[in-house]
Image (cartoon, rainbow, N blue to C red; front, side, top):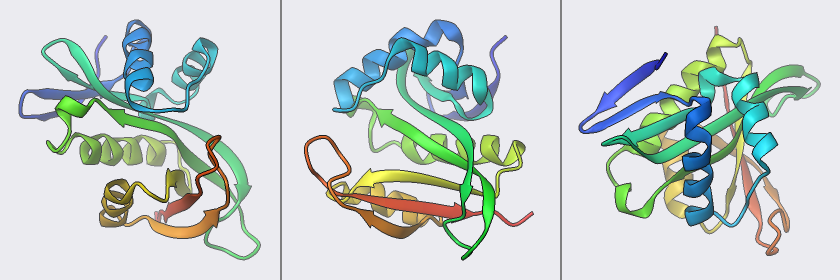
Length: 166
């Protein structure tokens, strides 16, 4: 059963279903240098379906976001040990960009992570990806740390996070 979170023009933002995983992997292959095993996608969908979302256009997947939950030290409190959401991967196909899809799927994934009562949500983003950094800042994420040589090609990442108040 499809769970539709939002409609954005001709696009549907909805929960990913198992039948979407191959198209999601194809979007990943076309847009990002980081790739994951089939099992990894399946495990994240099973763990946190509330925040594994797709943007669909005319029956085809145009973008996705996948998240997981974990426990660890807070990005905000000195000694806090918290439940955190982690945006593992987000991508929108080039021809579907600049339509608000990235913002919409991040906003909907925030809702999904909050449903799981996470205290905060974080992600890593390439320092050179200024558009994405600006988007996350508009959504109230802040840069918490620079991770040296985080990516396989040696590029640094920003660790960005947002804290939730319930």
